[in-house]
Image (tube, rainbow, N blue to C red; front, side, top):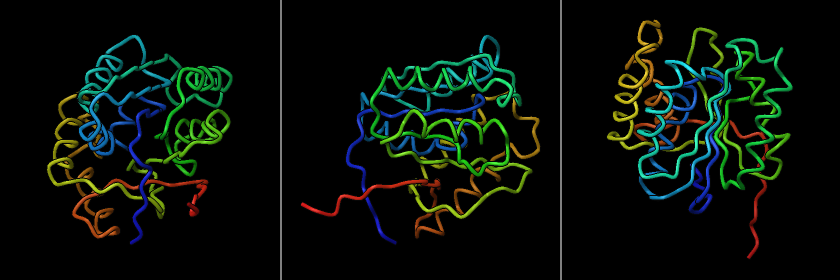
Length: 215
């Protein structure tokens, strides 16, 4: 297993189509980054769920997943499951986010995600963040669309457990879903950990990566 480092990121962008996407896909990575780098700036954008219970859940959750960070969260009101019909609004939101920050790292959905909202947002990100490291997170669900990731962020057992606890604590509106449970989240983290010789990990797709192997 080859280990590459992006250095010490000072600015992170995290985007999700729905409230809880970021936390499910990259919550452990955010915890790891924010605990290691107090004061890191996190610009987060969520396209749907604004103005109601879901937004309240998201604000409390991301505050917990980004301890000590300079968190700036925007939650919009695009209809769930209808991103293709609201392409211009989504594109404008991503472009406006880009004007506010020059991130060292972007956390976004995978382009291969079977959900049309996740997939659509993933395809918008490179149009605005053209020269940035973009890690595409995965979300376990009934679509059976998990792929073969190429990048891993190891999670300590404490961080993996904390992620699962925060997911259960901050998203009560999702607890009724059959896939939303401790076994699913910790099980996937264990599998990804096996793949990178760790106990637990989160895994990501990388569409394009530029290396600097010189001086």
